Length: 282
Image (cartoon, rainbow, N blue to C red):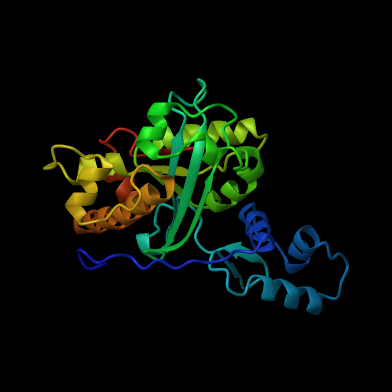
């Protein structure tokens, strides 16, 4: 359990697109080295020893997969496994800044960040401005500092949808008010012709309501003050996502102190807190 007040270590990991494609393939089910080599590296019919060596080197430092006793590659910890302890779970903590409005009703993403958490620490951060294809409203600029001149040269969401999907794949989707952020990510991915990853969703706002009943408010600013978390670049996707990830780690500590030390126990404990734990595949 992390010591109270301690800041989680931030480590940046540069992931090869080939590694991401390999993990995405293995997420669909156990795969042999020959299957990974054929589908990811384009190598078919090569000697078994060569494909084993190539795929082994490709995935050597990838913590999300392992090679089983039968020689096939599998994911280490399937998302949503009810008996998983938090140290073995993988989370994708997300924040989006938008043009305002609602997902599916004209609102568009102008910035997205995904903070990946595993082994109770932040392991990497993906973030990007997004060209929404519409003007950024003045009140959004006042709130976020993001203006048309910033998003104009930024990629469209369709251009980064594969990167976002890869960052989310095989992880529990986490956000502060998860329904809001998930709605925008889901709709943008569908608009881009990409399938949103299926999996579980966890809301730190609902966690705070259940675990911290003494707080009058549970917004991100209040939660950050309570846990002594500094939010750098408030109302920017990267800053808010990192703060939410740090809050998630403190909330998991508090959940453990209540005896909710597994995914199943957390689901059960949050069952009275709205959709604190829900499915994101609809």
